[in-house]
Image 1 (cartoon, rainbow, N blue to C red):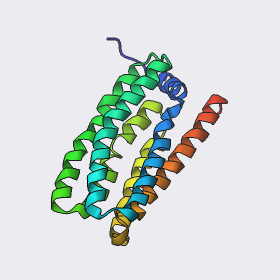
Image 2: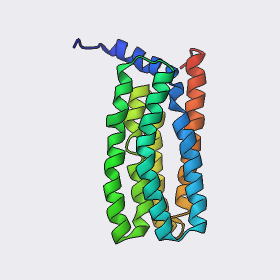
Image 3: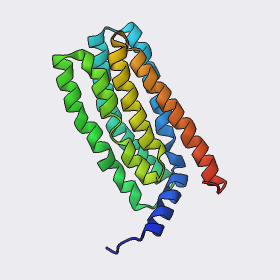
Length: 187
């Protein structure tokens, strides 16, 4: 295997960002998912909400891997960067163990654990696409979640997921903006 120089790597990351459309479909789906979870928090008991989110989180991680691979295959993108999606998403899958333990000991921790665990892949995705937007998403998301978990304890199953939906919406808009800049050559 021959080493790759920094310029070639940067060019490949930029090309991959453009070819995959910055994977903007994922923060768009995340917006809908988290807004739905926030709405469900008004309707479900905390225990039912936790059970639903654990099942959903267990399903969404392999679904994201499959969707990303299908996106890359459909667009016929040839890039070694595409192989990083599985290791990037592995911390998400591993965090579900902590969420399960929280479910059985203190269900009020589940929203916080899920928000943080499901944010663990975004820095790696940001590196793959050479954009700070995704790692910034992770930092803002975790800081906001921790703050809301303490400041609004009655909103852990409602306002916390709704706010994360807002972070996802902002992320999707920022990725779209960066994508349009990159396509016009002014990135």
